[in-house]
Image 1 (cartoon, rainbow, N blue to C red):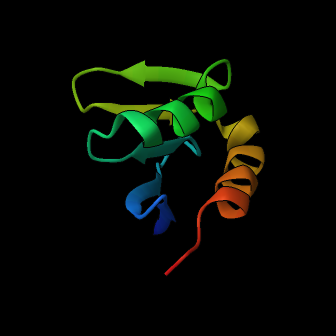
Image 2 (image 1 turned 120 degrees about the vertical axis):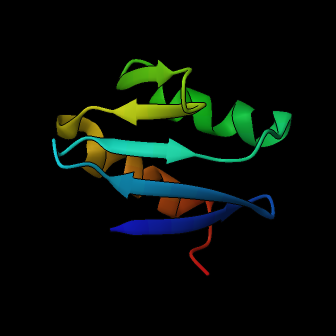
Length: 74
């Protein structure tokens, strides 16, 4: 299931992977990157091939809750 959050007016997409992990992607925007990266760092890893973060399954609820706090779901 894909979910969309608006962080400073920029769409941030999350998608649950079959493994239970969470993919987090947004178009390049330095301000949004400065918000999203600290949420994901230490809770997953950067996947350069797809320019997204992969958040480990045990941290998905925490990262999702934090994204919901800072970004409005349209």
